Image (cartoon, rainbow, N blue to C red):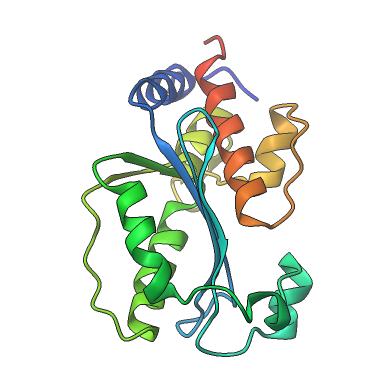
Length: 191
């Protein structure tokens, strides 16, 4: 990691975010396309304690390619709540909070998509969303001249770069824990 002027700003942003006692969210999905939906969601409180950690029964079958990534099968989700059943608890956990997510745009898109695929109208919870991946890109400082922005790092790579022992397992709770640990690492770093 290089010591560049953006790094102190990223550290200050991480410190300010942690001071606001965010919740940390992560999802696992059936894929990446416009028909993909959430099949697992975890929301951790600011101290890392779980508020929500549940599988979600999707409307469609989970593709084998997705199962190979995260290990979640159709059999595992068969008795799980639907998105429509789980959403009130998720919305309550996010209400009025800063919601820190590694790759925020993806998870927010999948929440909207899963709403649509569940026959629900999207209504943004009254929460403020924060992207840990964007802040970490600035903290890490690897410039991408082609895009004119800092290069994003995958969550597991960010964890390795920070020397964190939490493995990225492609399960929602473990990934939310790792995302939280990355933000804490950034906040505790020296400029």
